[in-house]
Picture (cartoon, rainbow, N blue to C red):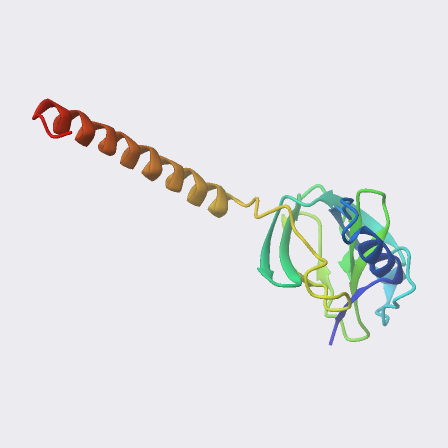
Length: 171
């Protein structure tokens, strides 16, 4: 079964960032072909075996105390190759997490939109150290705008009720 590992550098960076006001911003997802073969990932890895495409993360949101879902799209112009490894990189370009395995069933890129919708687990670090400046996905944005609209409507209704109350001499 493919495995997702939080790398040694990720563990060190996340631990160092805890309580310091700094952040480890995971910004990109990369795909590779594992140099043409499946392999077991390693905590000490600093790169994919053969990265062939990289895209910014389009959306992310929390799904647990130490887990969040990330999404990215690789468009049909992405070169065609068999995806056997996936890497999650921070703003510094460091490999934070890697997905690979000896039994990966490779999926093909190119000619189609290749969608990555993946839950990253940070179980290797202490609960509460991973904070996502999110959700920033469309559903969350819609929920916020709807809640804001409802709150504004209720505020206007309260103001109208106050005007009516004062007009009828009820202070």
